[in-house]
Image (tube, rainbow, N blue to C red; front, side, top):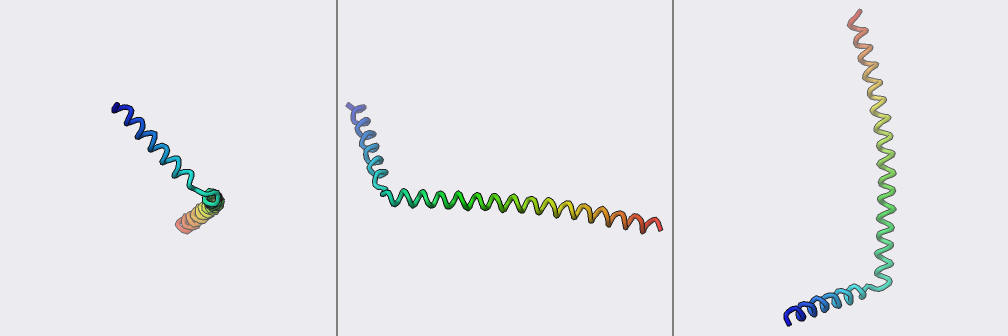
Length: 81
């Protein structure tokens, strides 16, 4: 008897959950879908921006290394004189 009551309670909970889930209108679902698509688009734009920033940072680091090497050569030459 106790098991039967537990099964009924579980079944009742499932019915309530399914009913609540069914209350979302098509407009709500479409709105959520549009929000998700916009979030995905923004994430893709952010990823593209991050990739461009990484390329720019790598180029700047290369330029900085070259400038540092040039400054070192100039300094070494000044020590030899």
